[in-house]
Image (cartoon, rainbow, N blue to C red; front, side, top):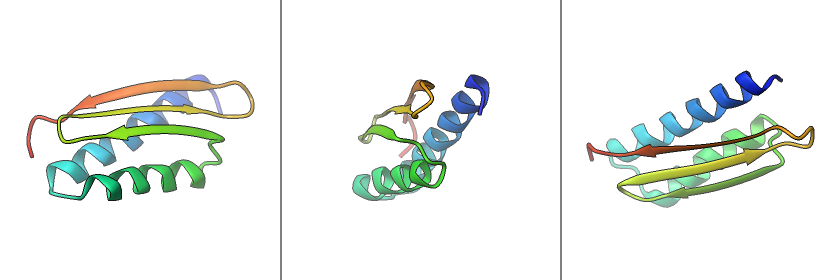
Length: 76
């Protein structure tokens, strides 16, 4: 996986979390879902913090790739 693909993966995961919050999902379920997706893609380390106004996520894998993304939730 290239760095670009890694960044795109994290962006997609963050978008999923944002949409879940916008449509009323519980915060714990949002974090669990995002972690589940990371596990499916063999991400070694995933640090995810979700709240109503903000999601912050950092992922790392064993080959040294890492990415951080945040999303502000304005509609909920």
